[in-house]
Amino acid sequence: MKKFTKFLMAFLCMGIVFASCNKNDFDYEKAEKEQIEKARLEKVRRDSLKKDQAPILREYALSKWGDKAKYSDSTGIWYKVELAAGNETPYVYKGTVNGYGQAGLNVWAATVNFKGELMNGTVFDKNTDGVPKNYTDIRQATTVYGDAWVQAFVPTIINIQGKDVRFDGLLPKGLQKNDKISFISPSYYTFDQVEYTKGSEKVTVPKNTPVVYTIEVKTVGDVTGSY
Image 1 (cartoon, rainbow, N blue to C red):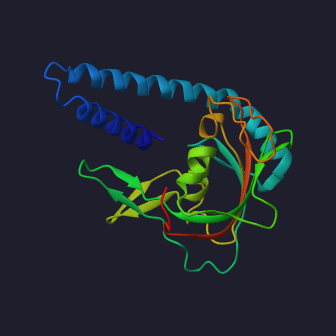
Image 2 (spheres, rainbow, N blue to C red):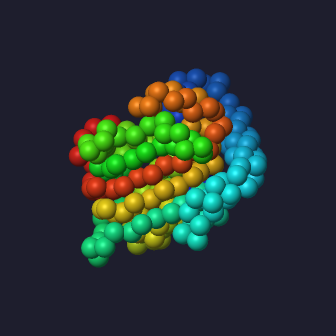
Image 3 (cartoon, rainbow, N blue to C red):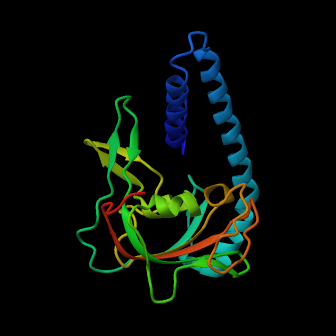
């Protein structure tokens, strides 16, 4: 996630510049140092959580999924995937490069059956039975459920303007139609330091708690609506 940190830093710094363009006495150097320090502390926090939660996630994955369990070292996510047949022409996830030479992901749309569970098996959120959830812009889901959904969907590497850019997705081609994935993530990729109480099952997810998601993709494609 080094690239993610760099992108975040760039956008934060740009925001400071735009917000302060009318202040002649604004200390840009100080602001940049403060943002760099914030990013450093955030990385320390995440690295600590990843280390502390790693044994718990490993035990869960191996006990639930056995030899089908796979591990992403760059993210700390454990997962089990069932790839569908007939995806010889997969949906191509895309990205762009901005004026600063920084690569970023394009958003996409998806219709899914999904379920979110605590590690004890208690379901806290899911789509209505028989009615897949349609996200016309995937941010409608990721802003609620966290960046773990991004890692589940996107490919490991995306070619942008002829250059391979690593995004640390779990699957080489990303999730495709009728693929099904279950995964357990470090808490900072899900609800992190926020207590989640808005799930369909009226179950509270405590802050700093790893959760398990299962996503079955019914459709995936370009954005069809506004965020």
